[in-house]
Length: 151
Image (cartoon, rainbow, N blue to C red; front, side, top):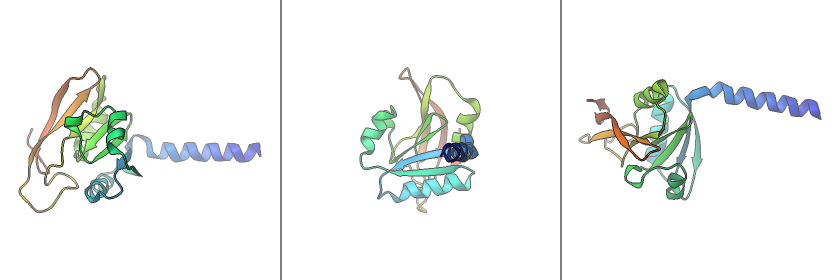
């Protein structure tokens, strides 16, 4: 019996370590299609994903300290950081590279048209990727028009 427990423990550690810092835990409403499209874009850009379907996304955002005005349709966690909404993969990679201290996460507030997962062939929205911190401050991390980074 002890042998089986050890084998199971080693197997679970190998499974977790194979994801490393590329694992996005995605929390979304069971009925949200754009969340699934964003997740597919992230997978294409090299991230592994685990999807959790939740009924009360408002409570979840509160648990992860996402300010209401920065909220979107889905919330992801990667390496202890929150990724709220349709954030481009390049900005997640940048966040993981610089590892800023005192940061809760980054957000693409709302559901900007032509952002990753929101591609509909329409006029792209201009939107900011906002870095939000534990002390309540925020700063613009990047600016996009659709999928094109402009700042």
